[in-house]
Image (tube, rainbow, N blue to C red; front, side):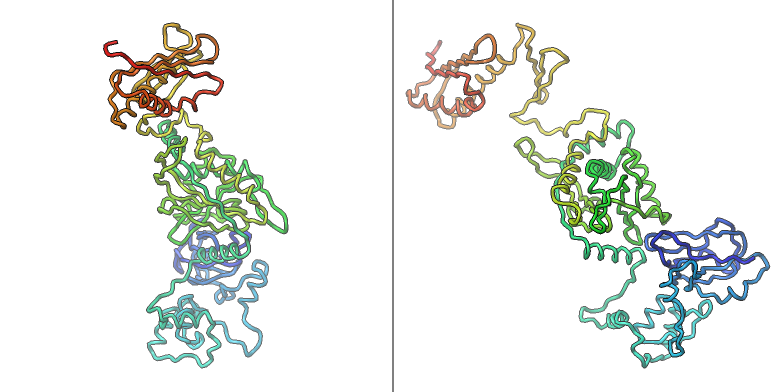
Length: 553
């Protein structure tokens, strides 16, 4: 018994599809489950499989033809069976009443009035070429299946001297624009028809930009710890891309800020229980946004695996319709293309979309000093109807905070910023176990301070030594700058022996022949250079006395 292959409904919003390619020819044997043609929906390209074994008796819909949901694509018959007469002349553009929306049926049905023009089956290229030259398709004999007018048929008519139709109303304004493209004052040009995915994306983005009041927040992110976490995880056997880490941070921030994981509708915010993460993926046929459903249930490694699989399906055109539906938040990462920043446009009905730029070395203020760190910019567009600036800022800064700490990744080792050249005014200190011993390091040098061993250097004694050393060095530098002759210098610093430091006495001796006024001024310069008064609390009494050191003393 003959079986009609119909245009499937591959999503709740789908009303029609386009035949991209046939993988079989009329008369070929087909097996159940074998792919026989590819159709393009609003969101993806999908393989249509044969539901039964048999022969492809007839290709009802030609390549490039738009077919309503439920419309006939082809007919499969048993070996030796003829295509039934009622199917031999079926029109692919017409959908069964039960399967197709009434608007689609009305659009494809011939006009009832006797004065209406006869519908002519033609390929999209043929229609465009005929429109450009003002030809009526009804006057051209088609050589395709069931009289389909092809592009070659139109070219042949032009070569034979066919004249433009006398009734120019048959050409739409858009077609007239196409016909005038060649005579444009901007010079020769060509037109490229958008793929169905591109056309739908253009329509949706236009509607989003027109109907959604956007506002955008931007932030610069120090990525040094995130990159260090990635390296530590890789060493432990968990491979994550930079995109994986950014997306995992976005999912975590959405969990912390559920109002951003939402949609606006009829004066209400619809806040979703789970994060369905849309990830923009570039393909040869245009941008697609596959969706990782319930991404909030996945850790970073699980999210990475799901992303890799779905991105590969997008590039090889194996996405299912459900892989492209239901996104509650989208991330577009153009950093791999070298783009630093951008202003994103929301994919309605989502309430927000995040743009991610390239990671580059930038000079950042770290602890009050400039450092070169790997940094990137993020920009998040929000729907102002349901998200205010304060709510948005909590999400924007939340993503930055997560990436800059990188604790959410659970790296197996303690993370440190990438090693920078040791600064002159920088040391690190670390306590050892539960003792009162502290290790101080500067570059490759290290020393210990102890509050337990009376013979060891304790922290207060170490401070006095550092203070004395600073004063002597600052005094000598001041003398060199002022070209003053200073010989030996010696300093004695002491503090009260018990309890909190309450008084510090410093006796400074200088071997020099300069007069008393210059010596006093030089000591003041040394004191200011060591910031003694700023570093020590006002309630601590500091006494600094200077005297001359006799030669040979």
